[in-house]
Length: 318
View 1 (cartoon, rainbow, N blue to C red):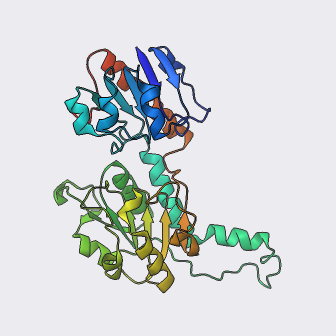
View 2: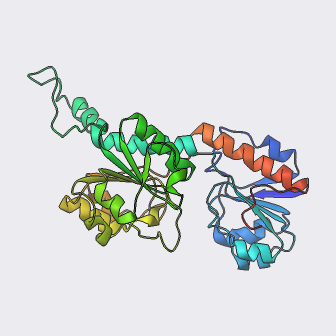
View 3: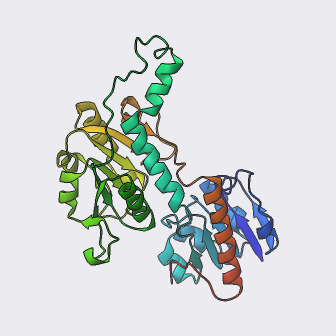
């Protein structure tokens, strides 16, 4: 059994072990693979593993030995699952491995924007507190989360976890979701999308990227939000129109934007968000805690074992 990992560095830059995969077959590891390298590297593979490498119909057409694609992620848009099914190739993902980590990053962004941790740490390194006439100082508003309204777009595993944390902060939690209102956990109130825009002090995005959600946040929807509201995106970059968000920050329509994802990754150096002081961008690290990546690899290995045993699990193209 030939197993080829085409872009393993992001999931495991060296702090975890690949040994369990080596026990399953002839394992070949590549840190990264350019599009033109994929077919040559995977030509003899029964199993390939990918994170961000695109596996298109054209690639599959040139890999006649391929039987299984393991995606080291929850999202599976990097694989043409329709073509995979037509080729008889099983495709599995890894669900729910990063729920706690992404929820943690979501609130890291929220708290950074409300409490301005980075701002005050920088000023104190520059000596401002040491020069203060008083025992404390602040030069930004310092809002309390308790009593504020958190709006959540999408109530999957991560959205629900974020909701629970928000409720513990004393926030009022509203959600736009396909779930029935009667099925929501206590404390979460269902509303329309426009209703969510109108009432949210903090709006956080946890929905998948689909044709309907692409650029969900744009000039028109931003105008429906409270002036000075905070926006958080730890979901998918293209859920927002970045130019419109940058303009809303510049005008004060948005009070802050905290994001762990961008439309293009890595982003262009001239992305307009980088010019906005109230845009706080982290480099797609919400999923990347060591604990989450360990769960990712563990489930990936379990998926492969299940496939070899004839009972594939976490299949996304059944």
